[in-house]
Length: 107
Image 1 (tube, rainbow, N blue to C red):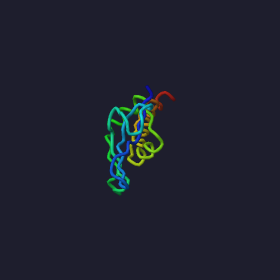
Image 2: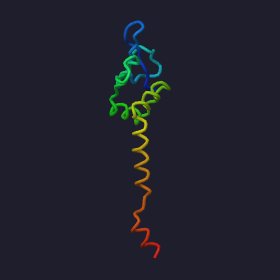
Image 3: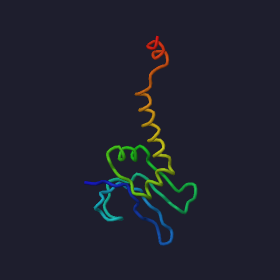
Image 4: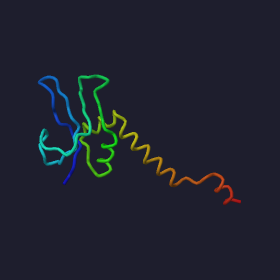
């Protein structure tokens, strides 16, 4: 089952609101979904985006693919930057050698 993180439209006519949902890629846009992980109201201004970052990270870790629009919303919400920094930090900590040890090895 291919899982996607995508938008589901709600709201009234001319006043869209979207729920950010985790759904099977074969289900329709407003059809069955697995979990709601956020909400996007494009007409709200600064309060437009609400995300459950722990659940978004859980689904991304388990292989869910965000759509292009959701990927840009995750970027605006800072989720992708945070994931990148934590991955980069783990990588740097794994390869880093303390300065004192490298100086002793050289002598």
